[in-house]
Structure formats: structure tokens, C-alpha cells
Image (cartoon, rainbow, N blue to C red; front, side, top):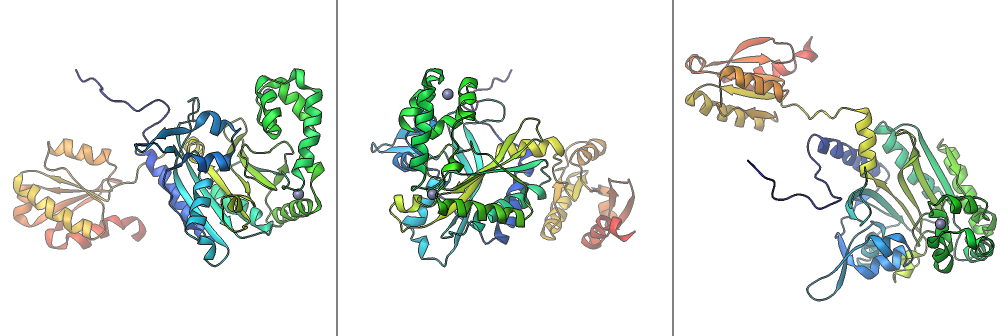
Length: 426
Ligand SMILES: [Zn+2]
Ligand SMILES: [Zn+2]
């Protein structure tokens, strides 16, 4: 008996065909649609100095406190596997002087992220994101345009029941005033808060909005709202952002309790959600971060971006489509050594012509080879036996409708193309 010696570590998964075709479909669509908006791909390392993430995501966040994959390398430096994409892109932007490129500078990335979370259905410790970051644009139209781009992609993929939730969390001018008011309110309800929220009260009161405990949720729903405290510049920015969304025909709802769990956001935050899987689920989220580049030592640069959670998106797509792997054009059935040798040269010729060709390597009977051709869902089976070889012909069988005919070995390429294009001809 076989016994499996090695398995994946907890919370990570292999992504196998035919599912990988679905992943490629999403990635291809994203590349194509993002390029219409002028985004270019950036590839940053999956590991960075730990400090980068502590400084950007924030010390009192769940990510930094509990979820990072952090280790010492052989030289004793603290290294972390990236838990998200923005910090690395901002680091690369500054390190490589990308702000010297013509403005705006727009980038997208796609790849694995790592967080030590409790594994559950659809949530993995290695998960994948496609994200975008745009620099040097103050205009609130940018956020609307980012959401438009996201919608185009999700609509193109056939994701339904989309909604955009938006909020403004103010700027360094107006947020402190709001925090004071929030603290005042929380103080009056301190006894009823959970222990996590009591801690949040001390360090980062805005985080109470992320609490999942029911009693906290009740208290927080009546808390003062950030939108009531915005300064005039933030108010103006938010209302121009909303009118841009209306111009683009993007339906939205304002969610005054959405603050997003990261420290670096300023003003606009948003989440695109869907109810396609029953409960409301976020597919993508993002926002503006006008101070991060400067905090990292770069020039004062406004910026905004979003990230899409690939695993959830793939689940949504699986619900609605069967992922059939693509079909080979030709499966070559060969009987006997000489015929099989000939099959190899024919396969080589067909592949050079751009036709996906599978070989039987002469294994098994005619019947079992044809059965394999069917299992591959090949469009055509080419059958070569010793007799055919002597006559200089082979049999071509279209597996979709059973139509078959004899073709000359000298005309293989043109005849096969004729067989394949049959549907368009009639
Ligand atoms: Zn403000
Ligand atoms: Zn709580």
C-alpha cells in the first residue's frame, strides 16, 4: 500500500487544474481591464523587513499583533512574509524613485499574501490578491475611477448582486476631533465593552468598529459617526467622490461604520460586496492613503488603491460556471511502432502550426486509445495504423459528431484545419 509521506501545512492549499484555468481567466481579465486604465504590473518580493508592515499597517491591528509570519533570517534580521500588498508597493515606489515617472504612476500586482489566521472554509493562510495602487492624484475622481475599474472586471467575470459601500474617515486635521468624541462616548459604555474593545479604547479606538461581539456592535451602532466630524476639505472631497460615482452610474451606499482595519487610510474608504453567496461578502476593498508615502520618507504624494481577494472571487465563479479545462485540437491514436514513430513527427508538425496535439504513445488497443481521446475531450482523433501508413493515409475522426474520413499524410495540416473548421463552414 502507498502511504502519503508529505502533506501541505495547515491552512494552505494546492490549486489544481482545472481550477487553475479559472484563476488564469481572472488574472487575464484583470490585466486586460487594468491596462485600459493605464496600470502597469509591479512585482515586489514576498518578504520584507518586518518594520515595513508594522509602520504601515499599524501596531495595534490584528494583522501585526497576531497574524504575521515573522522569522529571523540567518543574520538575525526580522523578516515577514507580506500580509498585504500596499506597503511593499509604496516601499518600491520610494526606493526606485518612481515618483520621477510622468504622473500619475499606476501599478497593479497579483500574488500570494500570508496571514496566520484561523483556517476556515474559503480562508487560507496563504491567500492571493490582485491589487492596484495609483500615485500623485488628489482628485476624488480617482477613487470613483478605481471602483469603476473594479466593477468592469467583476461584471466582465459575471459576478452579480454587487454593491459598493463607501465612507470617509477624514484626515489628520479632522480625525483627532472625531476620536475625542468617540472616546467620550465609549467611556460612558466602558462596562459593556468586550476586553478587546477595552484595549482598543486605549490604543486605537476606531478599531472598535471591527468588533464582532454582539453587545459591542449594539453600542457601536449608536456611536458618533466620523462623517459628522469631517473638515470642509474632507467633506468637499467626499461629496465630489460621490457625485463622480453617480456620473459613472455606480450604485453605492454610505456605511458610516466602515473604517477599514488598517492605519494608513485617509478620507475615502470603500468595499465592493456581493450577496451572491447568500450572506454579504466583501470581494474587494480599498481606499485613499495620502500620507503613507511621506511617512515612509518619500515626497508628499497622494495615493489610492484596492485589493481583490482571489479565493472568494474564485468561489463565486465556481458557483456559476463549470470549469471545463480547454480541449486539445487533436489526439493521435497510433498502432504499432512505425505508426507511433510517424505520430511523433505529425504531432511536431501540428504543434508548430499552433494546434494543441496529444499523443497516445501507442499505448493500448485502438478502443482504449479512442476512449482516452474522448476523456481528453479532443476535437479530433487521428488514427494511424500500419496499413494506413503503407497507403500514405490516416483516418481523421471528429469526436464531436463522429464524422470521419481518410486524409493524405502529405495534406495533414490543411486537411486537419478543414476538419476543425467544419462548424464555421456549414
Ligand atoms: Zn479632514
Ligand atoms: Zn468588542
